Image 1: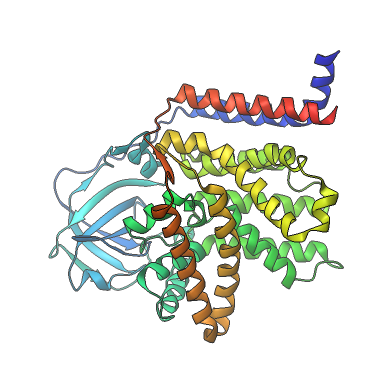
Image 2: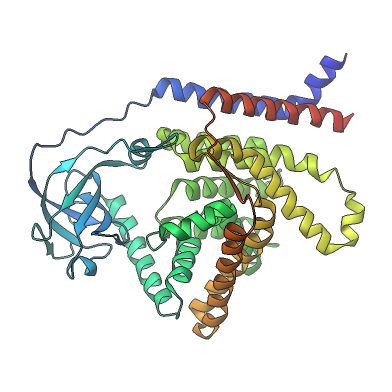
Length: 447
């Protein structure tokens, strides 16, 4: 009797979960991860490329992403640092003479950098000496229509980043502002990345569902939707995808945009927009468009966080009386942030331990700071682009966020547990236990 009751009550969660898991594992085994490796010529060759990313200054080189004109292959390109290479920017067309090498198999823990590059479309890498390149006229002839469309958006992003540099922010403040609002991490130093990683705030630097959710709420307030709901939702979704193109279409943002698009469509027909079914549909759509996304660490983390929020957050909400929370707005906000933070951390912790060997212990405290700060920064950024006089306030908010996270990462004891290296089997076992526990507690809560 109990077994039958469990099956009936858990079916709404279990069926979409089983379909999703079957689709993911089926795609994994069918795909077999066999990317087509490009065979590069031996020795140096002469070719033309177009720069398709912001140029990052490194110790001895200027690093950038580049697309080879004609073939469309994407390279990690490093040019000797000098006065000329410092002037390079997105959209420039260059003639290079260099030796192109396959992606190197560099690993840190279980994180495979070569696989990361291949999943993100990079076919190789090259180092170009100072006197082995020259600028050509900035023509995009030879690139596909889709590549030219993306370049138009990336050039506009570069214009916005140049406006950021005029705000009077320090290097650290500019780096965080650029990463958090426009997805450009080229200015992030190793030390600054470590502060955000140890404190458990790295997710706020990687554009994802949090950022698009904030933007969706803002657009919903600006676009009237009560009388013309379908039109308003279409306008909001188009704006969201415009932002996705603007920030370079990273996988985490595409996943979030697909999810928001599905939720907007479901809301038009008065269906539950946030559910395991809608998440499953979003994931399947992404994998159909780009099957190798399943190997992307950001995609895996985003998916795990969303599933955990959908499964764990409702269980935690039942621990506190909703009637009591409705009477205390501040406590309701604190409890809401806490439940989302814990639920998301439960979902991503095994993957973070597997790939990066670390666990941030103060993630609840960190999220109580970064979630409202990220919301305020996104809103103030829009205001500042319209009214530059508010730039001082925006810079102060970013400065305060950096200072607080620096304090958490360096002053609080045991801010991060290092050296965790679970195996694939152990990681999968943890997720099986977590999902089984959620289903059991969901059944008990409904009895």
